[in-house]
Image (cartoon, rainbow, N blue to C red; front, top):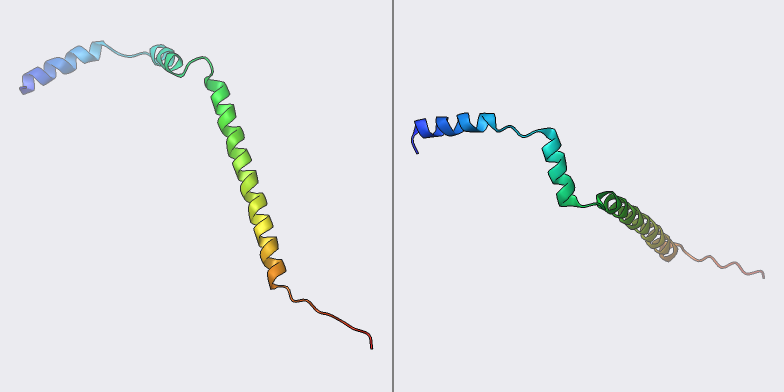
Length: 77
């Protein structure tokens, strides 16, 4: 392609502007009617995974603390 061909192609593209409405319509077609529900499900899964992680770290730390704690036995004479 020569430089003149590129300029001519650029001039043709300047007339074909994409509006915001067209972009939104295309995105709605691609995502489908349940796009909002998918976001909610993903957020719920993320919160569940975070809660599971916090609980597991707490329990593992508690177990490690019990292993390190010494047992002191006191007997009366």
